[in-house]
Length: 116
Picture 1: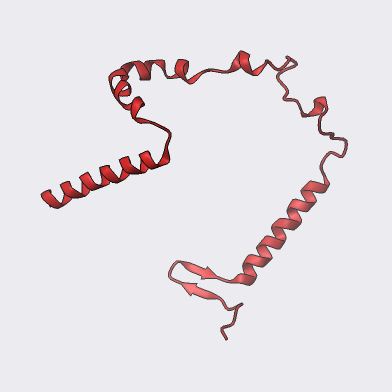
Picture 2: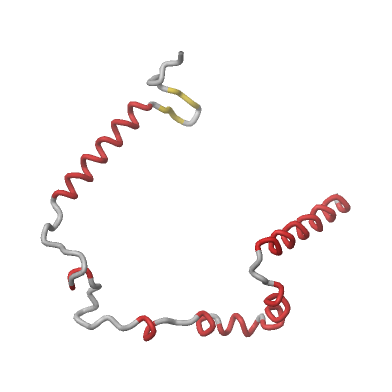
């Protein structure tokens, strides 16, 4: 039976399970010490959990939401001819996407075999 705690030396470094275990234990101790120094008065569901926006009330989601159609308007308008042909092909069915993927792969492989 192989020694489970033996150091494995490779061309790129070494692997020693005891060194990793020691590192994990030290990291857990540091994390625990940081956690114990945390604020005990924090309560979930109170105003303490709301984001601080310089004293301003947080706006509703519908007031700050930017729709992708508005954000990418110039991009979509520039490629309108392309999208008019491609969008109807997207059915949302995974088997259709796999069929397209395999079809393109077959065409690429045929081109590679012909021109190689």
